[in-house]
Image (cartoon, rainbow, N blue to C red; front, side):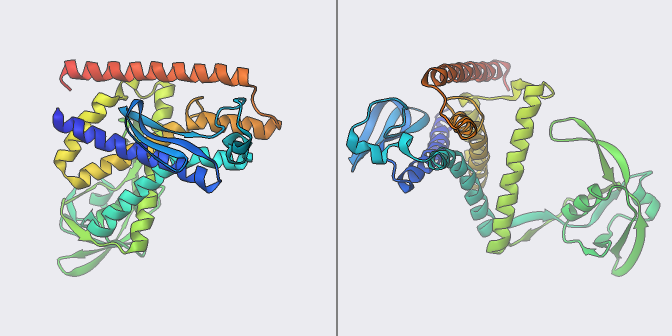
Length: 356
């Protein structure tokens, strides 16, 4: 448990620091005064003042905050603070300051993936057929175990993942395949067929297949800086898409909300990934960073997305949301978050008692 607690603090500390650093740097860039930069909430256990800003670590490590000058609309300001007041800045500047937090979480994921890919490369399955399934297009076309797939419709094949990508996007069109069979080239025609399979949400979906399995053998591929960056961005975008789709399915009810986890689950998973090694732990931080970025963009008052929603209304109507309405919406948003926290804690406790 102690190992999990330490891993949890490291994970949350990194995620919160990067998120709040985004807000802080954007605020400084647009010349907004920052009074407090805090990791954690509640009583301050460490604090140091540099210039105007008080940097501190607080007792409850479940978040953090950047307190900016003039952040609360309607609150009286000293005349000398008006030039550095958040509320007196243009709408575009305020929006960028608010959006910088989630964006830095996405940048963190890209950075972690980039470092992993640049220094460790990737491992891919060899394009070698390990098994040909019965009554499939592959068997009908004459493919055999041990065949090394070299090209499909003239496209060079480097890995089994390349085969999967081309087949699943084929729309059932006949393809020309060249394989290396015991040192000699063999050319075949094959027509993928539509089949049912389970996706990551365990839903039954249609996909095109040819009926082959990999040998399971893999090879290491080094990536140059451009390849590493491209893959880092695409993997982060994929996680963003997966997270948004998952949330949508939970809202619609097609995916159980019991999959949601809270601090206890995060701590357990963090401990497990830390034990599995630095690469697994770093990947876990990247995954959570994307999740944190997405969640903070939800249009719920008190979250960054809620503030952006207010700014959007102001941009359309030409006037800011009234303080009374804003206050009521913030209270409503806070109630939603409290209810969500209670729910995820409940899920965590159920998992503990069920032994999951």
